[in-house]
Amino acid sequence: MDVLWAPWRLDYILGPKPDECVFCLPEHTREDRERLVLHRGEHCFVIMNKFPYNNGHLMVTPYRHLSCPTQLTDEESHEAMDLIRASVGILRSRFSPQGVNVGLNIGEAAGAGIREHLHFHLVPRWNGDSSFMAVFSETRVIPEHLLATYDALLPLFRKLGTGA
View 1 (tube, one colour):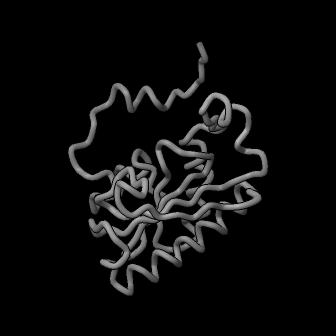
View 2: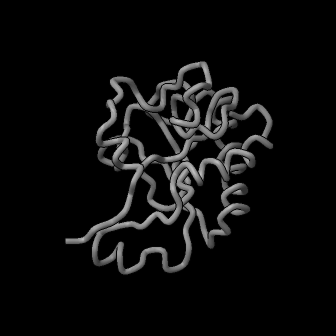
């Protein structure tokens, strides 16, 4: 039997499951750390993935509950791209990745885990990060606790201005 240490999973396993969309944020910011919200813009926000593929896995999401980029206003679309650009810069400064995957899955058939609310993924990548664990055990190892990553990234996102 393989044993992996992932203490943050217990909160998810034992905790209450939301009935509402995880990307539909309340207007107040009291839950931002718990929800891993790093930045709130005018039309979009940046949030960490609670079940990341790699350390620093971020998502850029419009506030409006929509499922396709064709539904974005010009303002939402421009701000999403601005936040993607800024997030790549922040990921590079914090993690020094050798690459960054930026992706959008539209619909369940395309792999969208939460297909009802559009979200862009940003995943830092390093040469060899698909190590034997991922290849042979179908397991990813995330070396830093989520809240430690959050605490390290938050000051960088606060420099963007109207952040969390």
